[in-house]
Amino acid sequence: MIRQKIMVINGPNLNLLGAREPEVYGSETLDMIENKLSSKASDLGLDIDFRQSNFEGDIITWAAEANLNMAAIIINAAALTHTSIAIFDALSAVNIPVVEVHLSNVFKREKFRHHSYISPASMGVICGFGGQGYIMALEALSEILKKNKK
Ligand code: DQA
Image (cartoon, rainbow, N blue to C red):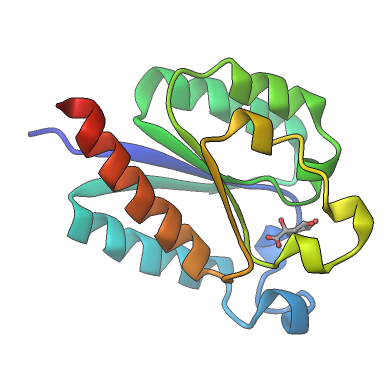
């Protein structure tokens, strides 16, 4: 049986995790998050395609690619969450479930982080649980994908 694949999209500056404001984002690197998520995915019988870019256009192109080849999207668009109508449009155009993730609790932070262009195009939002949020998103999607198969 071919395993279902989930694209995990990470936006600007998330390549710096571990070194970047650890008091806000924790000490885990993006590689550590990817490794944990990958092992969770194999427990759930899923595959992940984990990516990071500092460029808005990559994220838009990847969303369209995921729509053609993958079962779902997990996205942490980082600062582009709060600015990008283009990513909102790209996610609105897909026919697969999207889950928005943030490491930090954006609602405890500056006001400009309280608005997300991604949320209205997402099935749900997980924020404030650090790297564990990606695992929670994968678990939620695993259940949703099982239900959708029936
Ligand atoms: C973030 C929150 C955003 O406001 C911020 O710009 C980021 C990371 C998070 O994961 O907590 O870069 O998406």
